Amino acid sequence: MEGIIKKSSQLLFCFIVTITINLFATANLFAADYLEVVDKNISFQWKINGSNLDVILKAKTAGWVGVGFEPSMAMKDAHFIIGFIQNNKATIEDHFGTGINQHQAITALGGKDSISNKSGKLEKGETTLNFTIPLKASDKYHKNLDTGKDVVVLLAYSDKTSLLRKHPFYASYSINLKSGAKKLLKHSK
Ligand code: HEM
Image 1 (cartoon, rainbow, N blue to C red):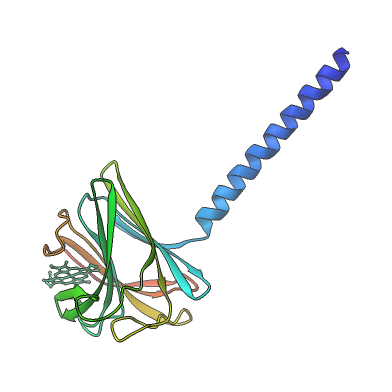
Image 2: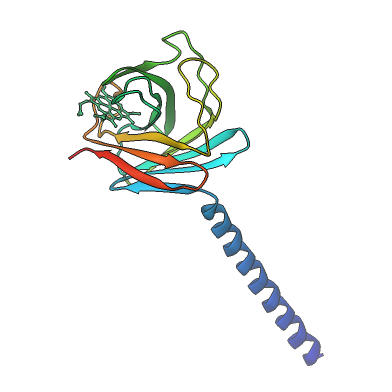
């Protein structure tokens, strides 16, 4: 009888160890799935998911956080995704760079919001936005993101939630979305 109990507890121990190892492996795999650029207090993580790009955008702020793709100059002609958390609710908008330092909601310009899977949280002073965008442009306000080539990615955040307020921080990078290779192009002081 004693032998059976001993054997059973050994089996139970092995089972718990196996489950724990598997859980850690799955968590690591999940984290390793995403490529990332981290710059000071902001991080842009992405994963190519078929014809879409899954994004996790984080910044140490309770204000807005944004990412932009493929400007022609400064902020002009870029496709922006910009959002913030207020009262535990994520607002994430699709914008277009209408000038070198201006942008407007794509829906206000007559285009269609292309962002899906919108969610987010504000925890310990850090805002996290999760969303998905198509890699193929659906209209003139969106960009074809060629995953094999370098694309220009803009990052910025503000300490205010108002989208009329400028960013104390910005950076622009040239990124190969497939390999994760990146080069810093420009940085705010
Ligand atoms: C998704 C959000 C945004 C991103 C990723 C972004 C990114 C950038 C970048 C990279 C630059 C430097 C461009 C260059 O000189 O090459 C810039 C400049 C500028 N942005 Fe934005 N921006 C965003 C939102 C905003 C908002 C909401 C405002 C104001 C309402 C704004 C106002 C400006 C202004 C005035 C400049 C030029 C002045 C300066 O260099 O400080 N931006 N932005």
